[in-house]
Length: 206
Image 1 (cartoon, helix red, strand yellow):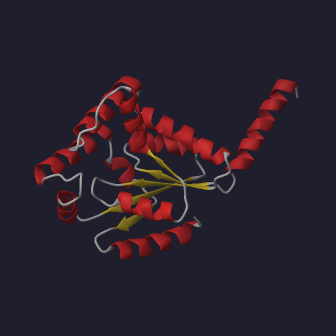
Image 2: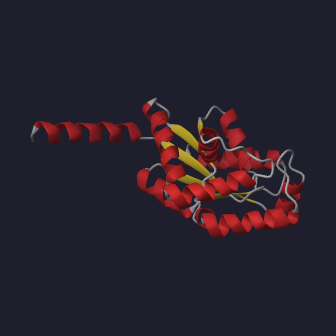
Image 3: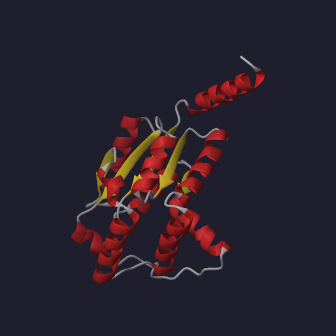
């Protein structure tokens, strides 16, 4: 074995050892399903998170694009950057931050808000033995009611229907929800959701 091959092999072995026992929990769900409540509960437990939307916000700020209260500027920018930089642009930034956390010694990491089928497939390819996908779902009528009364980011029925359509048709959002490993039906109280989540965390040893 020559030096270059030996060095590459040792790096691969080191990375494989680092990835042992690493678990990455990614949340998926439609707008208003309660993903942020789930993620807040996980971060309160001390787990670090990587926020998909944060990649968009940082790039918008870098380019001097203001965020609007109705979320329209974010939606338009997300679709534009996917068209110009590739459907995997956001997830590539997420993977880089996730690897930084792993290299820093983190063994349990939360990914907040997988959007698309492309992102799902990319994560499964990058971390084949480490990814767990958790879908947060809620009855549509209740979800629309919650979104209508959400502080700071409320939508009327027509707006949330259009957001749903756009996310499903333009961002392939249905795929990751359908393919999730675990589901939380978030029709009840926050306490009920937390209890169900704790059961899942125990099962997956997270």
